[in-house]
Length: 118
Image 1 (spheres, rainbow, N blue to C red):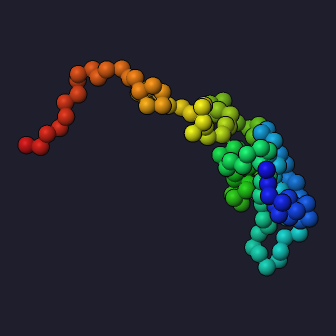
Image 2 (cartoon, rainbow, N blue to C red; image 1 turned 30 degrees about the horizontal axis):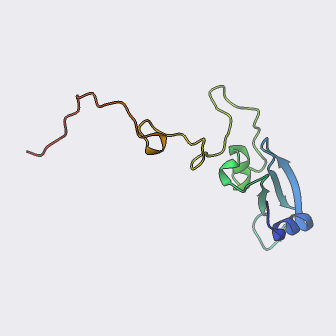
């Protein structure tokens, strides 16, 4: 949830540009300050504020890489849909043998020989 100051600034000076599939709302200034080079852009998250929840097309817009949000429909067949970073949650991806995954891994094959200086 956004702070009271952010909500007040959004209500008085913000213009809604769009939303993403996760429900995050993206804003820009209605009348940017002429002393500043470019208009401010910001996001109000739906739920917990977590930067990894911003999809790439909106990330490019937020950081002034693109003038308009990129079209999320024009994706290549090999691209996976965006998802937030699950690190530190129950959905985190763990390698085989990780302590958090039980610490069990397959035994070494015996073909490893460490290097020893001559």
